[in-house]
Length: 281
Image (tube, rainbow, N blue to C red; front, side, top):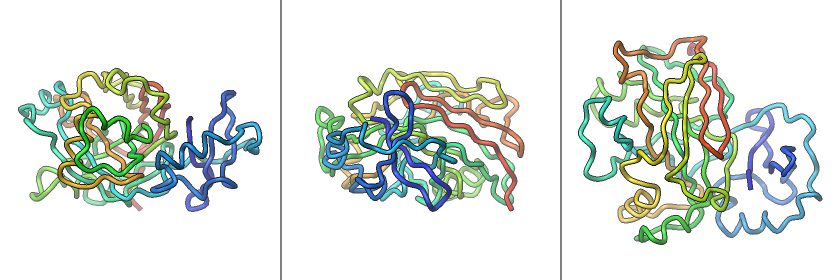
């Protein structure tokens, strides 16, 4: 299934993309898509619905984030071998964990706002993983069975706040609009192998990131199992699993986002995002 949310900000309703590419309204069956309503059990209830019985939405005016909110917005750093190399970093021995503020969550086509006092705003296309069942001390063999689905994420980053201001990475990752997520939550049964997905990002029509999740240092099953040793993962938690090479920080000379830039992100099987960059108000 491809699940989505449509409507103006704060007024979104849950929907489902049918086999003909039409949006169907799910709001009579699910209050929204987040937390317990994207658990594996909840998704099974949605699967049991006769799709033809759902109202067709003729012209959804906006597609919002595929999740209304997230209990936790986790990220993995330096998780692609070529990206680690472009930044001059050694490949990590264990996954590097950090968080984005949940308030960074935004729609896949909403503008990205450059924060005040930021001159080094960067892009990062990523495979997002949405947890579907509580995970604590889960083995790698069991990990994929606890995943509700996958989505596209742009882990937008302000590099000077992340790297030059001391402390942890979170403050360089968490500005409003820095977590475009969606357009769809694609259920795990539609993705045969999360480690063989092409992903790319084009900036103003120029492809700057083009890679595959096969370049991940730590695969999805490893990440979920590893994290579950240190915390309990909850239904609706989202994990951005790292970005491939081609970020602005790794270019020579470095290149960063400016108002008017347009980013188009795609992950195989999960759809595409498009964001225009705007100045902070």
